[in-house]
Amino acid sequence: MAQKNFDILIFSLFGRNHWLASQLKSAGMKVALMDLTPLYQKGLVEDWEGPYPLIFSDSVARSYSQSLTDQDRSELLSRGPSLRVKGKGVFEFKSDHAEYILNRWSQKGLWMSEDDKPFTDAVEFQNLWLKAFLKQWRSNTLKSLSGVDPSIQEFPINSNYVLRQPSRRGYMESSTWLKDTGVEVLETTQWWQLNFKNNGWELFLNQDDTPIVAHKFILGLTSYELQKYSGQINVPEFDLIMPAAFWVRWRAQVPQLEALDFIPSYSMYLSDPEFGVFSENMITLIKRPNNDLDVWACLSTEALSAFEFQQSLQKSIELKLQGFVPELEGLVLEDLRLGSDLFSFWPLYKQKNPAKKIKYNLVIDSPESWSASDSHSRYISQLQMIEHLKKAFISEATKKKGEFKQ
Image (cartoon, rainbow, N blue to C red; front, top):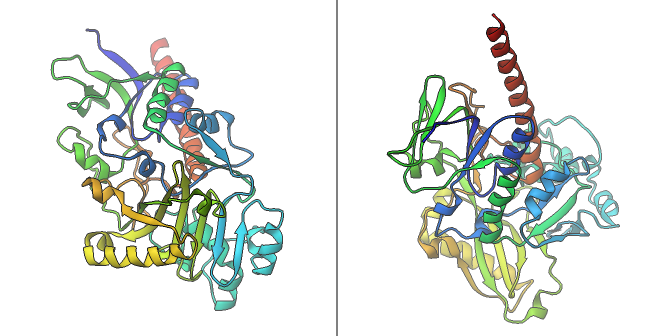
C-alpha cells in the first residue's frame, strides 16, 4: 500500500477540532483527522457536551455555527441564559429588561470597555463582579473573581445562545460532514502508534501497514486524556498536567413535567457573587428530554476523591434544588455510577499553563491551550491558529518553490 502524505494530522475528541480541520482543508492544506470518540464506550454525550450553551456572536462564521448545530436538535434561547443571584433577582442575558437589571445591580462595567485589572477595593468589586463572574464561569483556571485571567476574551453578551440536545449519533455524523469537506477521516482503531521522525510524524493504524506521514501534528486531547494512550504515542516533552478541578454532572428526574415549566431551558443559580462558580455556590440546570434535568457544578479533584464530601455536597445540592423543583428525585452523579474515569472533559487548572511552543511541528488545541472553554472562546482561539498555520504553510510552500527553481 502506498504511503499517504499530509500537511497536517489531527487527533480529535468529541468533535473539538472538526471545524478547524475543515478550515485548514479549505485553505489548501491536505488534512487527516482521527477522532478518538468511538473509543469512549462508557462516556455519555451530556458529559461531552459540557455545562455551557453554544455561544455565537454576530461575527462568527456561519460554517462554525453549522458545524455544531446541524447534527442534533438545537434550541435557540430567545431570552438567553438565565442567571438567578440570591437576594438580587434574575438576569436573562437577552431579555428586554437586561439593561435595566444590570443598572439596578450597578453592573454598568459589563457594557463598557474598561481595561481588566485586579479589584482594588470592595466598591470596585461591587461594580464589576458580574463582568469577572462571566470570565470565571468560562475559565480554565481555578482563580478567584479578583484574580481571573485577563487574557480571557470579553463575554459577548449580545450573542445568539443555542442549547443543543446532544447524541452519540450526532457526534458520529459530524465525521461524515467532515469527510464531505474533503478532510481524510481515518479509521479509529484500538491499536495505533504515532512517532515523531525526520521533522514530521508517522502514524501506524495497524502494525503491518504503511505509515501515514504528516508534516505537522495537532493534538486535540489534554495530557490527562492522552495518558489513556501513553504507550502508543511518542510526543517529546509533553508532560502530564493534572487538573485542579472539573465540571461534573448529576442527572435528576422530575416525574411531573409541569414542575419544569417555570425553569428556563438553561439556568444558573448563584448564591454568593463574591465566591464565584465553585462547589455548590453555583449550580447550572439544563433541561433534557423525558423530564430529565442535568445539574452541573465545579468541584476540586480533592472533593471528587472524598466520598463523604460528595455525599454532603449532593445533599446540599438536593436541598437547594428542592426550592425550585420540589418534585425532584433520583439525583445521581452519573459518571461515577458508570465507574469510568472520565472527569477530564471540562478541566480547570491551578494556573494558566504556559503556551506550548510549536516545536517538533506539534500544535495543541485542547482545553490545556484554550483560555476558556465556551464555544465563542474556542472559535477565537481556532481562528488565530488557522491564521498562524496558513502563514506557515505559505512560507514553507514558497521556500520549497525557491529551492525547486535553484
